[in-house]
Image (cartoon, rainbow, N blue to C red; front, side):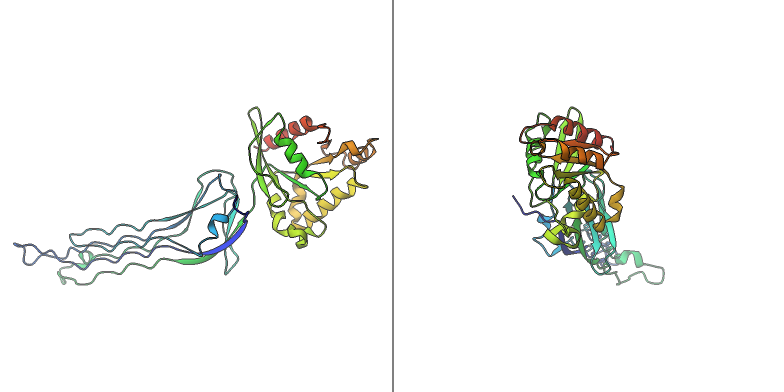
Length: 331
């Protein structure tokens, strides 16, 4: 499996335009044939396109330069040079493209759809052949235009996974166990890789409903400042319509864990406060008298609060139904 890469940078160049031709008609019985130089072809464009089968930018790290082809020069008999071939650069949905020099966002592929295209740089125009410069005063022009040069730009790419629901939790919250349990649940779940070390997308299906879930590595205190590489991963929750907070009911204060998660998320991006959320108390089998779960429900009376035990496989059906309902409601 290729490494997960959510940041990269490289240079892109569009193709130069081909030069026009300074040619004259030369035939056996036409000794004074006029100009017949054709135009040069346009240079190729630099085009980005989304591919939903991509989940990382790793394929773009192998080249420092992505360049379109040059247009061909014009030829005699007013033959137009062939246009340069475009370069098509595939990226996953959720890719943000910036100008490295200015930091400006050039384009944001924020829709989770296949085949969205954006032209980053246009190729140079082909030059005109001498046929265009004939006149009553100059019937044999020897001048033809050179093609316009292509454009060059250094860009950076950032990937923010697009999902209906983003899973967040402390490293001890049992998130990996939950993901593994959902993979084995009666609901059909796509065979996507999940891990605690890198973020990934999973597709949860029940009946005709489909929900995309982003599995975010476990957060620790200080994640907003980069502790545990938190700053690298927190942006992947920004596009989710819902956040699912996982908290361990076997710990001393699961309510505090939710507040800690919320604090780290809002320090990273205050706009995340507008996200709807689901509170999930994990490891109910360790909360023998149910007091921790009761305290969790009391602390968040206006939000969905569910308890699950992966070990006992309790509460999973209700959780799947809730995830599907909440995710589908946003479509």
